[in-house]
Length: 344
Image 1 (cartoon, rainbow, N blue to C red):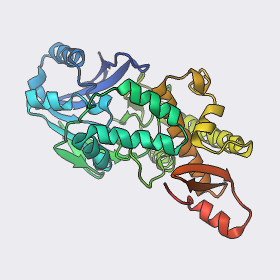
Image 2: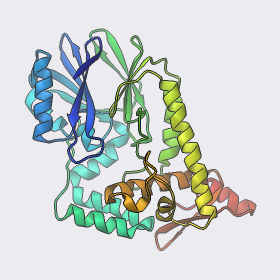
Image 3: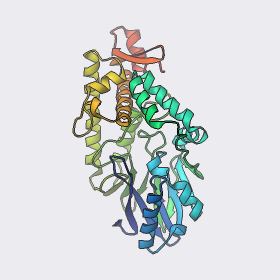
Image 4: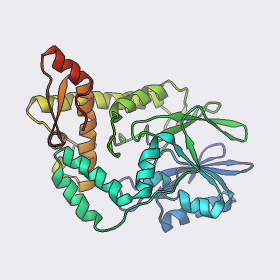
């Protein structure tokens, strides 16, 4: 644990068996107690690490007054229910994540099946099959329901500090950042990470374009006068504009790569994912574990959808399997492609 700003503490919580290794929780101390930003997995070792951090700061779990989850994923929201039960703290989440939250809270197996069906639509039946085997017969995670749904323009107050709630959809539809304008601190969640790019499109089927949303959200935060960025994974950093520019450039190049792969004959998101390198080590798709293969397929799909929206590819659906092809020169066909074509 480290104090990264006055009364702001970074507390890495363990993510066992995950390549990310840890999620950064942030504890903001005020006269009324602590605001906890993201809270890790719902596991005993995570809870014990959080208790230890609070003890080191002269408090206990009962001193947590609020839990701000930047988005619905388990490493950010997972422990919120247990902390709330012991402390009486409120829990907030972005309104855009409500549909995903309720689907998994209501019936985790059905929600997981819907996600696996998306892999079939992307011609990645083999990946879906391996994930189904790994999941076994377990029910899956039921996320805790929040007390407050935030949608932007709200402000959290901490001893006179105004924390502006900023919707940054992309990684999830309801991802939120917090900005302390007076101290120029951005709590970035998974939106802007210092060493990796956040996954895209790993949600239940809908009609949105996650990459389009993510790029717009990056442009939005790029304008913030932040001198300190507190991400959910990796070290804190200061050059927000520089890192945003790197992410924008990464996706510009990835769009070009996806287009080239389709021009060379790939037609499905799965085929495109198999033709592209992954991670900073530029690994082949076949060397990834099934979970990361799923992320690769969904991210490829997000890029292909943007290329269709821009009129560079035509998106087609046959037997509920989505395919892409170079856009026709026919004006009517090009216009349909620019709008994204038929949606599965």
